[in-house]
Image 1 (cartoon, helix red, strand yellow):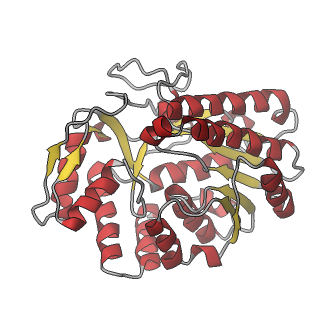
Image 2 (cartoon, rainbow, N blue to C red):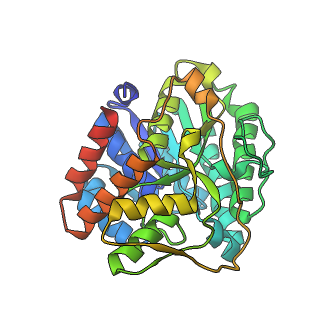
Image 3 (cartoon, rainbow, N blue to C red):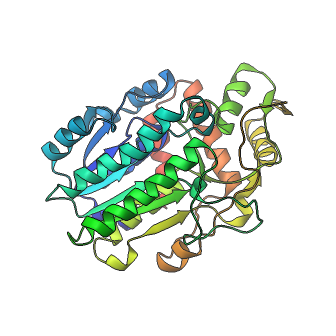
Length: 351
């Protein structure tokens, strides 16, 4: 991936580096030779914290702990490290958790984004930034074709609504301040990501792994729901490409869908089938009666823009993405050198 060359010796500020996507992006940036500052709360799970320890990431970057909702703390860290490139990943990322904690979700996802934008606005070093939102920002009409970047934004649940608000905040700051300062800031609306190191509750693949490890039947809440699933390295490679290329080409600034091909938009039941075949050992799933809060039934992205303007195409399709996730999870359970496993997967993806 040629975009990695751009990051050598660049000062990069990454929020959410202790999370699932953040740890993989940290690995990619360190591989590229970037000077990485991570700003985040502690890892959200005990296993996540153990993953960071076993990967050794925190010894190789500047590890700063803090809350993006705290503008004063974020500003101190930001202006102390004087970044040239910013990736904003820190968020409350779980739909069902947003029903339990709506105020915290809006605070983290909206004001956390506003705070990072304010830091960028008052910086004299930042030239490029990428703000990560979600594929769920769109007004979901449950239709069979993918949403394009110019479709209306909305948000049924607090998580989706908070991310839609974050998109509007980015647009406002760009139009009001950042364009005039020649600071290039884009948003990336990624589909559901899977991969090693995700231990979050209420996510399909982590739930499958936990059940398989315990020898239990996997409970699937909504087996008929369709989502755009992709390996975590897919959107991260796009994030790196956007942030690098927009520094030289202002026409690339804007919103970007980051999702898999149509063939990889599968139902949750189909995803569970793929997982069971990859894991083996007779693991199986069953439909779990669930009267939980509303979740979209059908959601798909139109990714024509990144394909035509960035020349992007997915490297790993759904079957291989699940197999790589299973490979990582089994290595974790076996006590393997997880840095070596992760680096091997990155090398395989890049080549």
